[in-house]
Image (cartoon, rainbow, N blue to C red; front, top):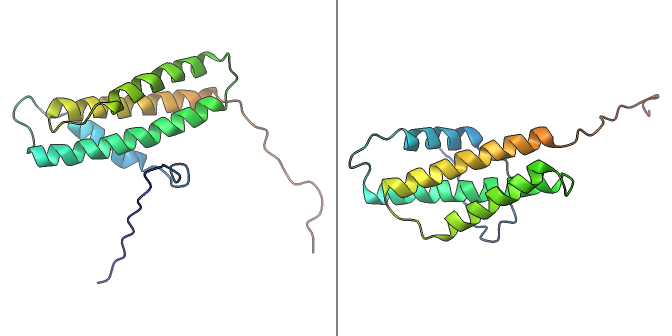
Length: 139
């Protein structure tokens, strides 16, 4: 059996809006991390990888929140709230990730919050009229 894997290295984030988010996998990971019982938790190396995944997801979703907020008028309440959420996300993501359950759960809560705000902004965005074709199709 042959398979092909493509790894993308995009430190400047040029491809963020080019590639669709795998929201379902992010949500499953967030649910799993937030559902961990009190106790020792996963190994530090596993925690580090999970936190890195959540950090990457948070950066990409934050970019989508920023883009969705830009579609609203300057005085829109949802835009002002998004600015506050993005400032908090920048602050939390600026801290070096730690290989602790608390850090992984904090990043999971951040991803969940960003998706909630993305949904809110998507609902608040002005609806664009759908264009329909009127007339005969060209031969």
